[in-house]
Structure formats: C-alpha cells, structure tokens
Image 1 (spheres, rainbow, N blue to C red):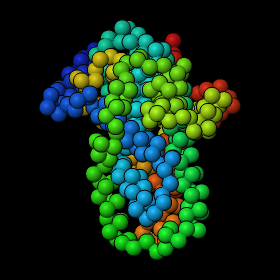
Image 2 (cartoon, rainbow, N blue to C red):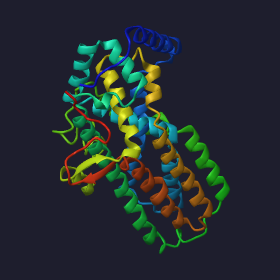
Image 3 (tube, helix red, strand yellow):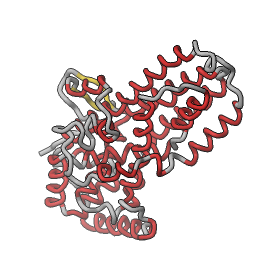
Length: 349
C-alpha cells in the first residue's frame, strides 16, 4: 500500500485548506443533475453516438455531406476531453480490486488523509493496491473506443475514392468561408443535449461497481459498450484484439489514466460532492486537450484547402475521425511482456 508521509500539523492544515477551497467554490446551484462526472460524460457519449450514426450512413448528395461535416465538427475539444476522462473514471470505478484498495488505504490512513493525497497528487490513486488491475481495464477500454473510431475513419477514407467518381461530389464546393465559420461556431458551442438520446440515460448513469466490463463486453467500460448502447451489432473487429494483446501505459500520456483513477477513487470514498472542484480540475487533462484541439484545427485547415466536395470526406476521415481516435489510443502501447503500469507499482504491500 502506498505510504503517506507528512507531519500531523501539516496534514491537518492542508486538509483544512483543501476542504475550505471546495466549500468556497462549490454551491448547490452549480451542481448539474447527476454530478460533475455524469454531466461531463454526455459530451463523450454524444461523440460516440455520432460515430454510431456515421458508420452506417453514406452521403448521397451535397446536403448529406454537409450534415456529416456538421456532425463531426460540432464537438468542443474541452468538453470532449472532460467527457473521455469522465468515462474512464466511471470505468475505473467498476474495478472491485481497485475500489477495495482505495477503501483499505482510507481505513489504514484515514479517509480525509487519502482524499487529500488524491487531491494534491493525481498519481497517488493508481499506485494503490488494485492499480495494476484498473490500469489494465482503462487501457483495454481506450483501445476498444479508439478502434471503433478508426474503423469509421477507414470507411470514410475509402468512401472518398468512391465519391470522387460521382458528379455531385466531384463538383467544386461553394460557400467555403460560410462553411468554415459554421463549423467554428458549432465547435465552440459543442454538441447539444439532443445529441445523446434520452433512452441512453439509464446506462450512462452507471454507479460504483454496478457493471462488470471484464466479464461483459456490453457493460459500461466494456469494448462493445458503445455498440450495444446504440443497439448495433459488433462491427468493429479490431476491438477484439484487446483480448489477445496485453497493453502497457505509454508514459507521456500516463497522466490521463492517473486522472481517471483519481476521480474513481474519490467516488469510492463518497467524496464526489464535497470535492466537486477537485474532480472538475481532474477531468481536464492537458495533453488530451492539446491533442483533440489540434485535430479540430487541422480539420478546419483541411476544409479551407479543399476545393471539391469529395475532398471534405478525406478531411473528415483523417482529422474529424482518425486523429481523435489516435488521441485516445495513444495512452496505450502493445506489449508481449507482462503488464506494467509505467512509474506506478500498482499494488504495493
């Protein structure tokens, strides 16, 4: 078990300061129904719902193509980042070994001490007993999610060659500046609430230890969760590689996993409401945001350089889809060796 080293006086002072900060910045009226994590999760669910729609639809005319552009362009990079971290946090909260490890630490050191440690050091939680198991769960989930996005990217890339032979798609696309301005405005606003069907709400509201993604691939955090949520069959064959690969953390992106585990640990200690400010901060992973934001900038640049309609399909494939999938995938790298957790011991005695 990871040790806590500080003087009693310093710990009490810091705990008081952290609690005061959360109390001062968190008002009941600021709480979104379902809490900070549930609210953030909607943006990620909206993106995957759009992925579900795009993997079966084929633009038949210019209006269909513009609708596809709007669908992929409407995702705000900040909201999408927070949504992915929130999804990972709820996924991590489904690991019995990790939840027990967090609670064992709280029983040994004291709940307030562990909550404080999590709040000031986002690497702390994943180093507790159960850290290796939760890391494995998060890496498999990230691989599965990126796989379904990349599969749609491949589909649109191939589609671009087909559309190139159709007269409407091989025509010059008018209204370039209006299109670019529209997409910029859509991305600033983010996906609307209607982008997530109301019927999804019960399954998106997974509570602590309410799902078993390791046993049920359609459960929250499982490799087929988004497929099952949309009522679709498993059409992402590459996602099945998660069963045959062992993944290890790509260290430059480890912070995303640390943040997911930290939020899950606070949930395990019933600190989600009292430390909502801390959770809000943990949800914004800088490297993920930079990666996703860059893809949106490149989507705009690609469309500004495109002349023919079919060229926008290439832009969607490579910047609206593939690069976002790579932002998620890059937390993991395949390994034939034993699972490691980067700089974390993942289960110290």
